[in-house]
Length: 250
Ligand SMILES: O=C(O)c1cccc(C(=O)CC[C@H]2O[C@@H](n3cnc4c(=O)[nH]cnc43)[C@H](O)[C@@H]2O)c1
Image 1: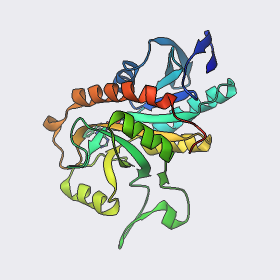
Image 2: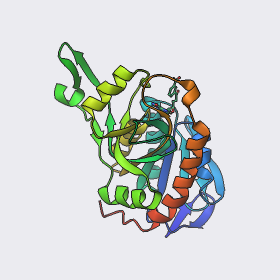
Image 3: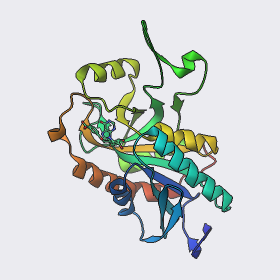
C-alpha cells in the first residue's frame, strides 16, 4: 500500500494507516523501537505525532482517559482533514495485571475495553452509566484482529479495565474482579482512546504490558523496565501480523 505523507510518498505493507496512542513518551519510544526508523514529527494541538517510515503514527496522548481521548480525537481529526484517515487506533502501554492470569512482564490484548468507574454509587452498589440510561461502558475490538495479535505475540486475551484511580487495595481489586470476571488488566487510557476512535468510526485495539499487580499498593514491586521491553517485543511481532489482517474482516 502507498500512503501520501507530508514528506512525500512512503511505502508500507500495512493494510490501513495505524495510530498508536500511549500515555507517556517512554511508552511511545518502547513501541518505536520495534518499528522502522521515524520519518519525522508532526505538531498537533497539545501533542506531537511521531511518524515512522512504515506508516505507523505514534502519539504520547497523556495520562488518564480524558486527556487520552482529547489528544487521540485531535490526531484522528487532523488525519481525516489531511485526507489520510486512520484505519485502526491502538491504545498501548504498561498496566496493572490481575494475578495469576496476567503476571508481571506478560502482554494482554483486550477483547473488551471497559471503563470500570463511570457511573453512580448507590446504597445497593455501583451502577454503570448504561444502567442510568446513557453512554457506553465497553468497546469491543474486532475479534479477528484480537485473534491475529494474540496468536502472533502470545498475549493473553481478556477485558482491560480503564480506571481513573489506580487500584491500590485488595478490597478494590476484589470488587473489580467480582464485577468484571473477565478482567486481566487495568490501565488509565484505553476507554478514552476507544471513545475517540468510535466517534470517528475507526476500530480500536488495546495492548498492555504488565508492570505491576493490581492490588495493594507496592511501588517496590513495579517492573516498568521489563514491561517496556515486553511492549517492544510485542510490537515487533504485532507489526508483521497486522500486515495480514483484513480491515474489513471485523
Ligand atoms: O503510585 C502508585 O501507586 C501507582 C500505581 C500504579 C500506577 C501508577 C501510575 O501513576 C501509572 C499510571 C500510568 O501507567 C499505567 N498503569 C500502570 N499500572 C497501572 C495500574 O496498576 N493501574 C492503572 N494504570 C496503570 C496507566 O495507564 C497510566 O498511564 C501509580
